[in-house]
Structures are given as structure tokens and as C-alpha cells.
View 1 (cartoon, rainbow, N blue to C red):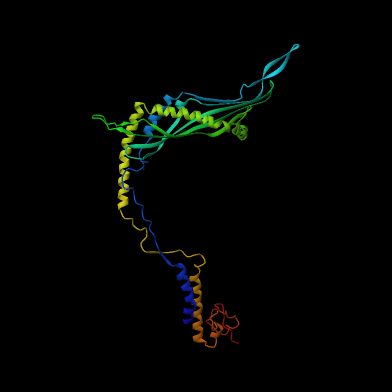
View 2: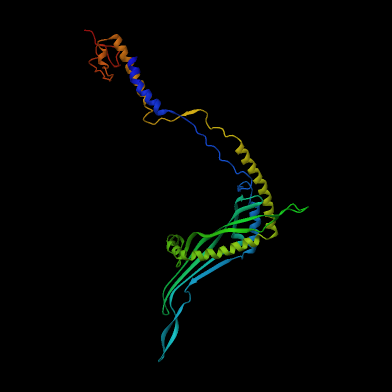
Length: 362
């Protein structure tokens, strides 16, 4: 078995070096803030009840229909020379490119959707949250081209879209509750950020053609609407923000904010206590002791190769013991495998050739 040890030793050494062992490194938890006056995210506090109160107050501050009209050169006229009888006079004639856009959100008390989300507490007794507003709207675009009183081009398109807004609000407690009153006196809502955008633009009619054809050809109508978006979004932003700030001063919304602040204070205390307990508890390693790295695909075949060597050298040792003169056909002094031919094994039973048959005696 000595040849097997010499030949398989490099294989085992290579497998041992390539596999190796590695100690699992457990990341250490970072230190928590020393005090309790830091921002805490509060996803466990429900906001649906307060959102319903805020929507009811907001729709009362908004008109039932919001209509925003913008135009460029609409109705523009220039002086043109004309002949009346035998006299030359100057008259006003339509001239230039006329453009007009009308955006309208109808039936807001029933169509407006309002949702509150992202509640957090930056400091004690103060909360910040987001309000999302969504309302359907219709937009009409009209364009005419006049040349000294003669209309040379006219186009009209209609599309639907959605007016969406995200408003950031902040409030806090400014006075503790009086005796017999379970509610805190809260500050008015402060608007710290707002963004309004026009989304989901879908063409419905272009010059009297509607249906699927209008939807497929809506790219030109969308490009015509694009320059008007900033002005339209700015108008809706002003109306939404003014309505929310006015609604924040109503008794119903103030009562809802007071209850929301009380729930947020309790949730904030729970979160801070949980974070403090987690910071003082030592983290357990995810795995004790070393772990074995997975072998690359090319190294997974080494055990099979070693098994082949073991079988071959075991057979070679057996052949050397039984047939000393024949063993030199199986390996040379450098232990390179030289497979014997069928003719050489014809007279030696028990070799690697399992299909060998004894020669028949005549």
C-alpha cells in the first residue's frame, strides 16, 4: 500500500489547503444614542381614524370642483390693412398661434382620496407624518393657428389624468391637559413640505377620434401638455396646502391630533425601551465554532480521483504479490499508470479485465 500513500498524499494535501476552515465573524451591534431624545419611526400606530377626520375637514375647505385654465396668445389680434369701398382702413384680425389648456377635478367630496402614512417622532411630544392626496381630473388642450384673420390650423384633444400630492406635516404638544380634560392642547399643523404631480396621462379623444386610436396616438398630446404641467401643479399645490392648513385648526382634527400624540408617546416609549434592552443584551454568535467552506466544482472530483488511485494501487500490490514478474506491467518506477492490453492479461486471471475468459483446453 506504499505506492497508494505516495500518490494520494499530494491530493489530500491539496484538498486540505483548498478547503480550509474559517471562523464565523459576528458583526457587533452599534451603540444606541445615549439619551432618549432622538427620532423614532412608529409604524405600529394606526392612522386610519385620523386620516378619515382630516379628509372630512379638507373637503369642506376645498371647492367641489377645481378648474385651472391656462393659455398662451389666446385671442391675440394684430392690425391689418383692409379696403372698405374705396377707402383703406386698418382693422384688427386674428393672428398667431393660439393655445389653451383647461384642467378640472370634479366632485372632490366624493372623488378625493386621502391617506396618512410615515408617522415618526423626531423628539418627545412631537410627531411628523405624511398625507397623500389623489383625485381624478380631465384636461382639454386646444390649439389654433391664424394668419391675418384666416384660420390655417385647428386641433382639440381631451385626456384624463390623476392629480397626486404628498404633504409633510408636523405638530406637537404646547400645553399639558387641564384637570378633568383627557386631551392635550396641541399646536396647529405645520406644513414642512409638499409636492404635487400629474400622473397617469391617458388620451381619450383627439380631433374627434377616440377609443384605442386616441390612446395609441396620445404621445403627441402628452408632449403638448408637458409645458403646462408646472403651472397646473403649482395651482393645485396651493389649493391643497391651504385646505389642509385650514382643516388643521378645526376642533375635530385637533382632537384627533391630541389622541394621535398620546398614542405616539406610548409607542415611542416602548420602542426606546426595546432598543435599550437590545443594546444591553450581548449578541449571540450565529454559529459556534468553525465552518467548512464549500468546495469549488473542480475540487469536488478529488475524492473520486483518490478512490480510483486506491483501487488501482491495491490491485497492483495484489498482482505483485501473486505474479512478481507481471507487476512491472502495471506501474513503473515513477508510478505512472500504464493500462495493460487484453493480450497481456490473457494468461493471468484475476486482473482488472472483468470480461476475461479462461482459454479453452484443447
